[in-house]
Length: 133
Image (tube, rainbow, N blue to C red; front, side):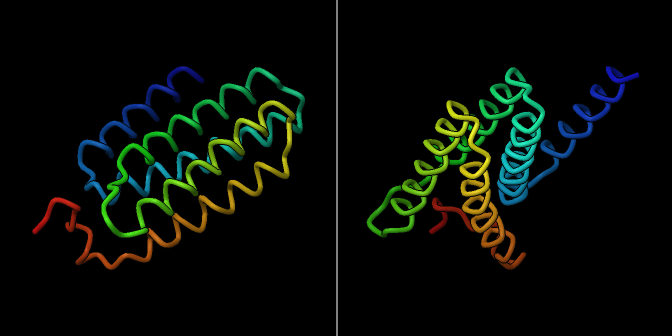
């Protein structure tokens, strides 16, 4: 039964991604990273070392994906976001090494703030990209 549920969730996520705008995909990535961090916290609290490492690794992969999409031009926005993503990634690594739930809370706060900012972008602005003239 659990395998069927996992398969259903995967199909659901895949169809959401194929139909989603870049803006929506970014929202989904933030949500996914926050979910993996919450799962990591649960794993630490239950002394499940394997699950902790797996979930933190997935969170790092998601944040690295977000980071790889940054546009570094003359303004400070890309550089500031890069520094925040660097803080999050290093925090996740530290949390993994020391099973530090406080650090997980700190990086969750940063990601939640970024997600909330992203969520506040008006819908009519969702189509704008760095490549638009």
